[in-house]
Image (cartoon, rainbow, N blue to C red):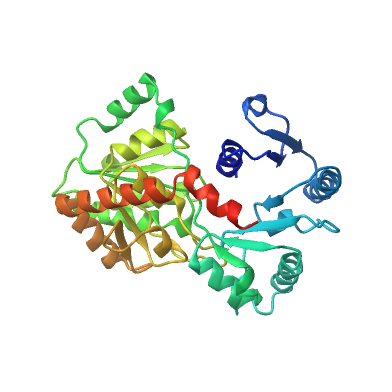
Length: 351
């Protein structure tokens, strides 16, 4: 949403963002207005909806772009066009938890909310198909727009460069995952692949950036697999650090699986990797096939299939020609198609 707001503003639009949390000093440095709301979540949403209605009555507002259906739920009696983003993770799946009251109630809330909107922007074909199948949403109001990308290469400092050099010194090949540490992201599959490769590639390094509830389980797996010397946890990293690490890595790997209702709706991390010229290894879960073009910008594995994942990791590690080809293709695609200055035109066209 930050990328969208900045791109719209640079495009010449007058942008106001209604955000959560307390006022932040950086808000004033933006070239658009940020108005923040804090407090208990349901009350916060009601206050936002009331404030939004007032703005629409006082100004000629072209459109309202909402980050999800929840941001629109309490909005009523507004004639301004509402465009809602759909990510896949927030849409209940058809035939799952069929007898769950919470599941049925959530579907009713989403369907009721979508009746207010002008357009729904789905982040992938998977998300679009899921909305049609699970919620019976009219496909005419759904438009697929893959998210834009923010890259912070110009903010890289000497300190960032020194940090990266020290971290990666004498390590090769380098595989990296940027993701929240949770079971569905599939870190475990890459750990098993590292174990298969460590004898032939004694300097192989797997970088895991991010944090989350699955950290202790991952550390347990690493100990069992005896690959402590080949895995490095980075916790959360800055955007400039991310750019440097991706640029100096050989492969981006994230092979998600579905866990309950949680699924990968698209996968901007693959686009981020492509932007920096490295190929991706993903899985056929959720909307990942929209983010990775098979055998063109990366490889797509069978979700949860350890052998298939390991074979694909080995293939890219051993075949530098293929690796560079996929990385070059991905970089060209990402920079030509996903930069916000081009992507924002698609979002504005939904009005």
